[in-house]
Structure formats: C-alpha cells, structure tokens
Image 1 (tube, rainbow, N blue to C red):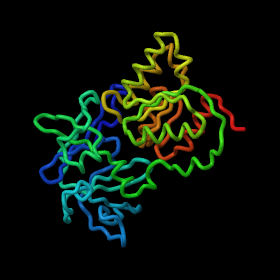
Image 2 (image 1 turned 60 degrees about the vertical axis):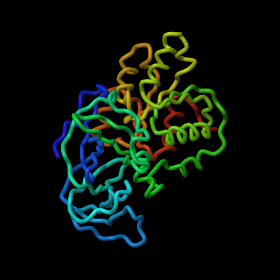
Image 3 (image 1 turned 180 degrees about the vertical axis):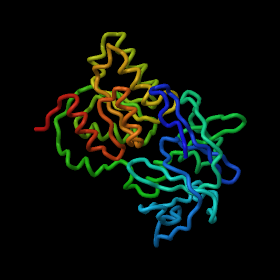
Length: 301
C-alpha cells in the first residue's frame, strides 16, 4: 500500500484510510497501517475473546486477526474481504473489514467528537467523525478496541509499582491527551510519582492556548516546565503542538515529550524533525515518569 505518510511536519493534517463494514463507512489513521492483504484463512484460538477470529502467518510472523464487525456489534464476519494489518503500541494486529475505498488527506480541525447520532458500540470506540464528500466517516479508536479485548496492551500500570514512595513536588506539567480515560490515568500516574501540579487538556489547541497565555502574562516558568502530548487529537494534533512550541524562541526551551501509540520508525523521525525532546510509546508509563524526572531534574533518593 502506497501512502504519503511523511506529510509536511506539523501541518495539523493526517491521512485516513477509508474502509467499510456492510453499509457503514469507517476510517483509520494511515500512520497506523502497515499493509492491506486479501483475507487469509485463520486458525481459531481456544477460549479466545469472541472478537478474535484467530491467528495466521502471512510471512514469518504470527498475527492476531480481529473481527471488526463483531467489535462493533454488527454480527460476525464471514471468510472474504480484507485484512488491514496495523502497527501501534509495538503490536502488529490484523482487522477484518469488507472493503477498502481509498486514502484521504484531511485536517484535524475538521474532525469532530462523536455524539449520540452513532450507535452505542461505535460511540465507545470512536475518536472522531469527519464528513468526506457526501458521507460521514467514523474514525475508530483501534487502541481502545485492542485494550478492551486484552487490557494488558494498554498502559502498563504495573511499571508504577517500581516507583515507590516519592516526595511531592510542584513542577508544573502540561498534558494534552484527547482520550478521557488515558488523560485521567496519566494524570493519576504522575500524581503517584509526586507530580501534583499537572494541567491537563483534551487537545493540542487548548494546551497551546494555555501555554501562550502563560507566555504573554510572563508566567511561563511558573506554570509550564514540561509538556506531554499525544499525537492523534482533534482540532490540533501533537505534532502541530510540537512545531508551535519548538519554533517559538520564548517557549522552545521547555522540554516536550511525545507520548503516543504511534511511535514507529517513521513517526519518530518526524518527531525528531519537529524538535521533540523525547518520544515514548503509550504502554511505557513507567518510562514516561523516568523521562519527566530526567528532563525536569528530579532525582530519586
């Protein structure tokens, strides 16, 4: 599958892959996709989650196949169609879909939050909706789909057990994360590690507005000493936020960490180009705490 994954850095754009399940149109960020292949016979896994079709080996690696129709409570897929093979959170996973319609370049500004107009099943695993030409595309939260099937693929909260008791500190941290659940978990994790002063926002635009406000008021040092951002967010994504921060002479000294499920080789190069100080994959919550310690000068006793 040919894509233009290396878009100009920090433009607040993304490419989405449109696909269908029945008469319904959905999308995935192209940055998460490795390839699209024709359906292959899978080997069922005993006692597996009902949404797991089985496992197969398209080459030399075993891949788990997930029935996306089942995840969305639209029945069970039959043999045929396509597998979209994805990579995020350091996992290769195949999603069974009916058809792929194409790749579209869109702006995060045009993506809106899901509402009651979509089904309960879709609402729980959708990150946004975008109108493309004459149709609405639901952008699915593939990380949540996978973590609902296997919670061990989400934030590795076990890593926090190694942190132990820590002194409280008031180092001001700004967090941009659109997932309400992950936002809450990251704040809670930082609080447990001693960071009590975390200002959290649901997208890059709100975070940047706050940072700009602090700069203009002369309170940047008091209120912003570290920035943590996801990549995929409506209105303004993390790469755009990174570009704005690192191209501003008054702000660029503030350490910025990209904390995302999309940290692969290509996206890491993009983050480096934009000036991100560190880039970590989402499950590594313990590494996030250690990295914050390093960047703001907190030493363990």
